[in-house]
Image (cartoon, rainbow, N blue to C red; front, side, top):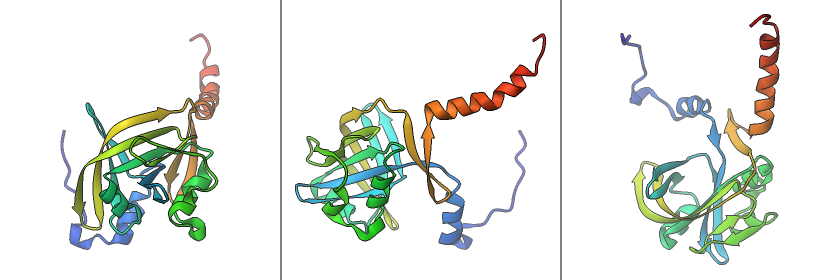
Length: 194
């Protein structure tokens, strides 16, 4: 394999605007991170959740250190990860700050349960994880929070909420598979004698 050198911008030439624009091409699953206990709770919408390890089950999330969730995660040593289903656009927008809601007010309009760690978990999430903080690595504007999964609750739903090019999009396994089948049918039916 031949590698052809290309002109790439070096890091001192990459602006935050260029970086954000390029990252909009990466589709991300939408989750709500929850933090705190009792009435001292808050949360935020993120697309930065990823699995770090299966054994032991560990998640990683990148959180802006100026976000209201960050000090609560640090103080209590726990957080929740709630993977949103396609019908939970209102939850995603509320926790992204739409309407100016903050703290515990963001939890209104949805059903929550308290995890063993004390963090709120969304009852209708595709999957919800109760995580204990193992480590927080601070780099630049964000903290990389590594959480050991202590509890999981999963739904049987197949439609997820994703974020792509600055918009929320629904990803439905059944509907999208049906659409792909429809698109491929004309080509398959055009064959004779195959």
